[in-house]
Image (tube, rainbow, N blue to C red):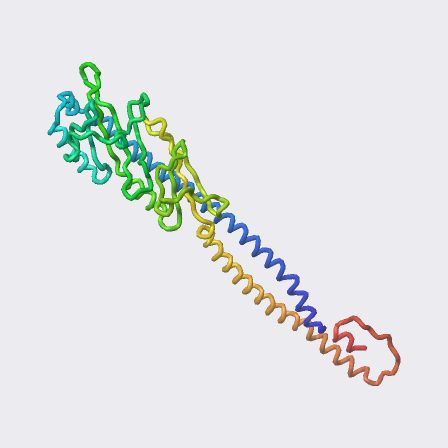
Length: 322
């Protein structure tokens, strides 16, 4: 092996491993920073979605409580179909756009005495629509029977009482169009993430499009990053404690890291190429005088006949001096 190649190998061994190690450390640290940032982003989005849902439900509760105290609700005591109250309910539904599927006022006997949907007047509502769980609460909230359906409906009821003697007059029933909740989740999830909302009983409240109809949400064992936030219950609905879970697959979450790995490999190749070129030039500069010296020594000792011990392990230029 020539001195030049020996020097080239030495310089490469000294420079390349530290460069590769530094690149590896930089990549690993950057990878952890990116992963932490992704997890923080998932948590922030879970908090944002939970806050939106909580605010939406709070506004619906406020509407129910405020409307139940209106003077027009006292006309239910007449016990007959009330046109003025029906007009009020229809105007209220129209004013809130798609938030309400229908607004009903039920008499003591459970029949509809006023409604935003005139076709329901005088009819008894099916048990599934009454939202009565027989618990002693002022407000009652019922989730959709199938929150993954194409047009799910949740219900919120508040009793109507006489201002004179406090006797029961009937019930104000708000049917909430649950598609508005689905839209919030779909907008937040986009195409990269999946969002589910569960209550304390483990019942699904709502899910983004990719999870509707699925029995269970994916877990960490399936290769998913997860952030969960449990929001405080809305005043008046202490039992409605919802947990919002935002998930993103590792494949999509770590895609930037994979691109970054390719960039680091490219940098390492460039650095390695530069080190080899620089080492080659430097080794050539160092070896050149030795080569010249060996040539001069050969010329000066061409006629020498004295026997000398011969080296067996040395660079080629040094061996040539023997």
